[in-house]
Every structure is written in structure tokens, then in C-alpha cells.
Length: 184
Image (tube, rainbow, N blue to C red; front, side, top):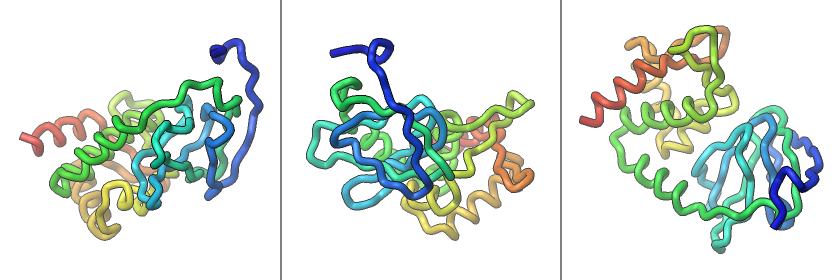
């Protein structure tokens, strides 16, 4: 099997709401975000720049929906990137769904913010990706969008999140403290 440095990929762009099949190819995300959906259409994870989109070996392989305005990827022959099992992702998602509501939302914000958040001038603040909106967060946490709104308002009052110029910023240190205090 060739490694990525020796293989030639093709740059491909996808528009929002495009569904990406990994049946015949594997991809590495250069920019943008996708939602990873199971065969029932439930969101099980989010992926962004640097992540791989690969076919899993199981019959219940996930598929990918573009949630950012545009997704830029490098497309490789299916055998170029070694396929990964989705068991770890599914286990993490299952554990998240077992948590109480406020902890579930806080934990999801923390995990997604750490993986996909953009740096701001302040080391404590991360800009949460616009592509992961309240509706998608509700789907991911298996909660009602109204419940997400209530928890986000509570976190805003507590100074854990901030809305600035139509963007959500997370005080990652405060959120980490909140997650730790709730889970005890």
C-alpha cells in the first residue's frame, strides 16, 4: 500500500448538502465540514480539515453530508488510505447520549470546539464553526432544538459562551471547568 506522500490525489470541491460516497475513493478534507451520518441518517460525528473520509469495513458504513458552504478535499484511490473502523466513534457517541442534558450539550460543545474550533486572538476563546449550528447540535446530541437553545442561553449567562458578530465563541477553560463540575 502506498503512503500519501507518494500518491497523487485530485482536488475536488463539493457544495453544501452534497452527499459523499466513499465506495470507490477516500478523501482528506482540506477545508470545510461534513456531518457523519449512520444508515438511519442520524448524525454520529463531525469532521473538518485534516480528517479522512474513508469506507469502513462494516456493512453499516457511515456516509458524509457537506454542512459548510463548500468542502475542499483531496480525493485518492480507495486503497490509498487505510479504512478505519467506526466502533470508537460510535462508542463515544453512545457515551455522550447517556449523559444528562446540560452535561451532554456542554461535553459536545467542548469536544467539537477542541476538534473544529478556530483560534481567536484570545487563547481562552475558540470560535465555534458556523457549519455546526443549533439544529445540527440538536441532532448530534439527540435533543430538541428548544432544549439546545435553553442550555446555550444558560451557558451564555454563566459566561461560558459568547455570541459575537453572529458567531459563537467558547471560553474553553470555563467550559472545561463546567464539564468537570457537572460530571462529579
